[in-house]
Length: 395
Image 1 (spheres, helix red, strand yellow):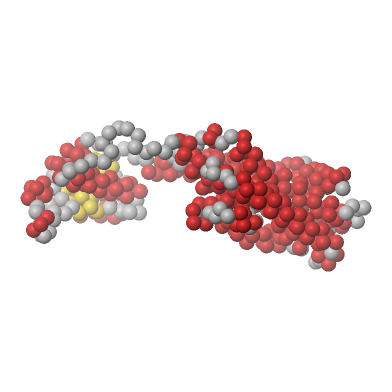
Image 2 (cartoon, one colour):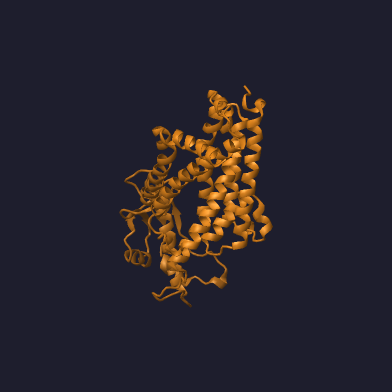
């Protein structure tokens, strides 16, 4: 049995690793493309919301108090609008998104400071108001509106400053850098790993089984003096190894680009995890890949060609992604061992528990044992399909 399984695995490894295009497109390109894409997205988001200069604000009846507060910063540049005609011209340019026009038009009532000082809330009359005109379709205009609103809120708070919140320069957020890393890993990595493992399986499993059916080369394997169970086990094991390598490539590209995607504000520190966490994660990933490859192999064996196999596997991948998302929702994170008998869901929850440093050894043991059992069932079903000429030679 051992020699037959190893022979099948060597054949699959030889088919994959000697095909430079397949290695490039399924093993190297995903990680590289994800890294480049996420890095460019992060730079785009950063440049979109980063102010390179002052925002031009057209102001009518600018009060001295607001001008003094704005002078303390360097984000807003006020331009006076002396009359109705200048204001309408500024509004027209703002609506059309002119680059050299105002990004915001603020209209204050005359004598704003005096009206604010004399306003009595208990009287119930109309409070002094400020009109802010902006164009939400323009990033600079939206940013100008946000900054101006914050400035006015700060001005309003100075009128009745009864207490302050966190006035000192001390660290009021007690979460450490390690806590933030653990939180981010536990929420994002389970879903990403499920997607990456499934993507790796989809890239190789349909070609390995449905592709050989389509080319007619599966008949050569079936007539060899080898048990069909050995053939099924050899394919599942070899495809699992390749799928893990593909998933690791995508995972590495994502982790390297994640700080850039977050605008460089998030510091990711994987040193919080020790050898025990990595060993547990390895067991979960290995058993999960066996389940996924078994499932995709069965679908591929039933399909007539690679295109049909891929179309049938896609809905299953979507379900896998949804199960991976459960790690982000606390109400969907169960702790009873019986829940860890559910394939794929158990893997996502175990990964989340490992990355959050709250792994339950019982649940991990149940998950690994259940995944191995499901993989054994997959080998059995695939063996029966290899024995069926109706399935293997269907047109």
